[in-house]
Length: 409
Ligand code: SAH
Ligand code: TMP
Ligand code: ZN
Image 1: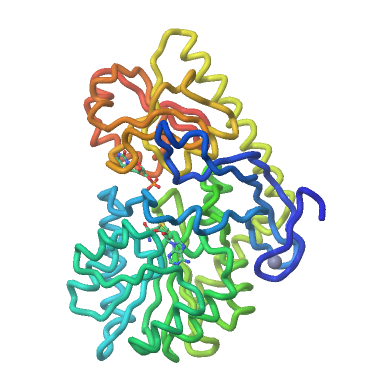
Image 2: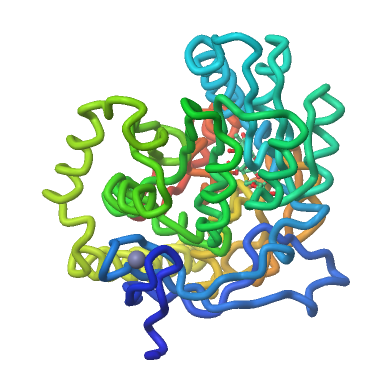
C-alpha cells in the first residue's frame, strides 16, 4: 500500500489522499500544563474511494481515545444549536413520532439537547452516548441515556429491552464512526419495518464550496455526499429517501434512510446527486484543486498574522473549537502569533489548545484583553459571537475569518 493510499472502510476499494495535514493531535483533547507531554498524535490525511466516492480519513484514531469520560464538547454551548435541535425534535414529533407509543433513539445524544424536547413531549426515548460526563449532564435533564458506543451489540440490547424504534437520529455523529457496517447491522435489528434513520453531518459540497477545510479532523472520519451515502446505504440494506440542506456548522445535509421499497424517495435525492455530479464532487481532480486552495489559504493566514504582529497589533483567537486543531497544527501557528484563545465552555478554560499549546481563557477575559483583532475559529457561530461580544467591535476591534480565505468582518 502506498503511503498516500488506504482501503475504503465501506467497500474495500482504493482510497487515494487528496490532502495531508500531517501530524495532528486529538482535536477535542485540551491538555493541562501537566498533560502537554502525553498528547496523542496521528496522521491526518483525507482521501476519496475510487470505487464508491466516499471521502474518508486514511488513518483511524481509536474511538476510546477520542470519546472518553471527559469529552469536552457541549452541544448546548450555542443558542443557535439549541434552537436547531428544538426545531428538529418538534418536527420528528409531528411526523415520524406521531403514531401510537412511539420510540426514538439518538446516537451521540451528548448533553441531551435534542432528546430533552422529545422527553418533554412524553415520548419514549433513549440516548446512546459513550462520553460519560455529557451523558450525566443529559440524565440531570431527565433524559434517558445508555453510556455506550452505538454498534450492532448495543442495538440488540436496546431492542430486547425497549422493542423496535420508529426513529433513530444522529447529528454530527455518524461521520465520527468508521465502523458503519456494524452500525447498519444494528439499525437493521433496531428499526421497525417502517422506521427511519435520520442523520445530519457536515456536507462535502459545502466544505469544497466554502473552503471549510478545518472540518477535516480526527473525529470527522467521513465527509458525506448524497451520492456516497446513497451507495453506502444500498450496500448495507437501506435506501436514501430524502435529503435536506442545513445551514448549521457551515453547511450540512440531513439524510433520511428507510428499508428498501417502504417509501417513495423524494425527488430532492436525485436532484442533489445530479448537482454533485455536475460539480464533480466525485472527481479526484476537483478534490486535488480544493487541496491546492487549502494550502494557499493556510500559508496566507500565517503571513497575515506575522504582518499584524510586526505592525504591533495584538491578535487573539476566539472559540477553542475542535476545528482549530487542523489549521493550527498544519501551519504551526502557536502562542508567538496567537498568545491565547477565548471560549465560553467551562471544561476548556484554563487548559490549552491541542498541539499548539495556546492557552484558553474565559470569554469574560476577552472583554478586557485589549485585543485589536480576534481570529474566529468558531466561524460557524459568527452572528452569535458577534452579538455576544458586541463591545469588541464597538471599541474598534475587528473579527478575522480564515474561511473561505483571510478576511476582516
Ligand atoms: N449530537 C450532538 C453531539 C455531536 S458530538 C450535536 O450534534 O451537537 C459527537 C458525539 O457522538 C459525542 O458526544 C460522542 O461522544 C458521540 N459518539 C461517538 N461515537 C459514538 C458511537 N459509536 N455511538 C454513540 N455516540 C457516539
Ligand atoms: P463548534 O464550532 O464545534 O460548535 O464549537 C464552538 C465553540 O465555540 C465551543 O467551544 C463554544 C465556543 N463558543 C464561544 O466561545 N462563544 C460563543 O458565543 C459561541 C456561540 C461558542
Ligand atoms: Zn469505497
